[in-house]
Image (cartoon, rainbow, N blue to C red; front, top):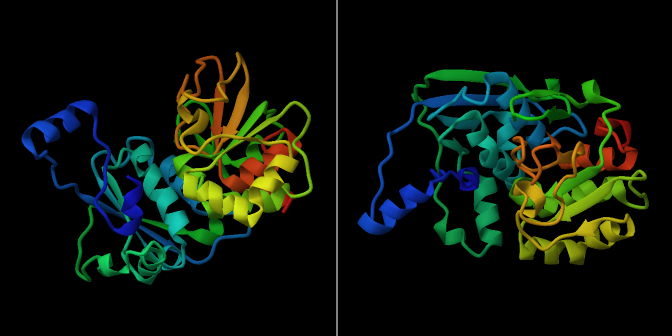
Length: 295
């Protein structure tokens, strides 16, 4: 679903759906109704795209947009980087949505140009007279660093309400928040510091390209000097396939997209979700921390 950040109708498919597509060369979708998500104004320092999507999911619920399209618009969206747009599109499904869509604008064109694909750019935006099933309005300035509590993504609360919640592990990366911009935010907070005693800090770049760029930028050096474990690019411990499976009773704050019971390899573990800034700040204190306290 991440490609929705480019204005592409992108959605997940199960194994049966994929098998049918291979066999018949086609698949079936119902055209979804659309929710307009209008985000205006500017984010506070320490608040970003991950906090926005967690807030939205908490607001409408894990099934609040089942088989709907979430169309993101407004001044805050227009100013948002592609990295932020990808994060939000990636997590639209956690509200039940079929797709999370962004306009294809100058930011999209610049991203495609950097990828050597500017000729593929086509401007795309909603019609001026488009109608929506529902409109959700959010003021970016009102948002705070937000965390999802175990064991559902819509179980959200401001990070400050969880102050003092002890962590044994922090994961920064995965497909949701493992891009270069995410690692830059975390590195700025962690530079010259070490995680709290007893906290495992795991970094999982989203791709080989991101890993190489992070090395060139010095972010990987910062993480290694901070005592972090650097994983090969990919999912990391998000779904319990790599290093980072939780022990019985352990708690982890992760920048991944899901915190279901057993998601990180142990049904007796507890997964909290937050932004790269919240994760980095929490690694330093060993407890869930509002990143504005350390930035």
